[in-house]
Length: 113
Image 1: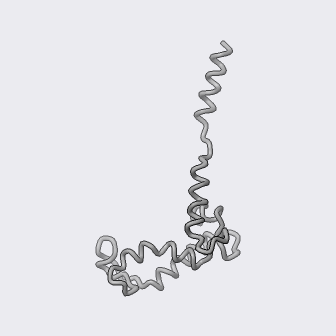
Image 2 (image 1 turned 90 degrees about the horizontal axis):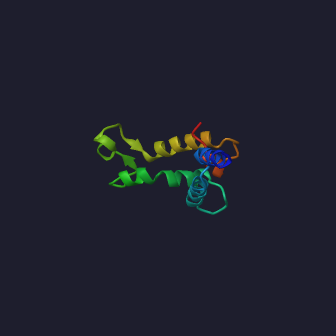
Image 3 (image 1 turned 135 degrees about the horizontal axis):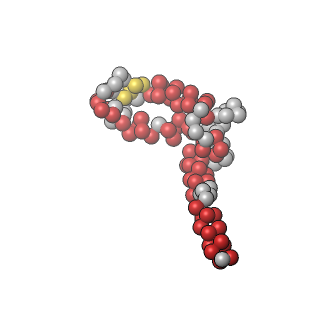
């Protein structure tokens, strides 16, 4: 009887959600990749540089503007890089929960506000 209770407890504990170390490592890796100067935090410029990879990849002619034919679905008004960077700055501001002008690992991992 005692062995069955113990086995049942082991099964129950094994089924409980446990934070994954890979998730923490992924956040640290993400921070390390974005953190160009390796100071442990991400500046607005570092954030914009990292998050602009898709824009840069789609801007096939390199003119700094995503024309309709360069956008997904081949539609949409032209999107200048300056507008894209302004949108990223707004998103950065929402992620900067403590308002210090930098993103740390906790702020990067948090859902968008």
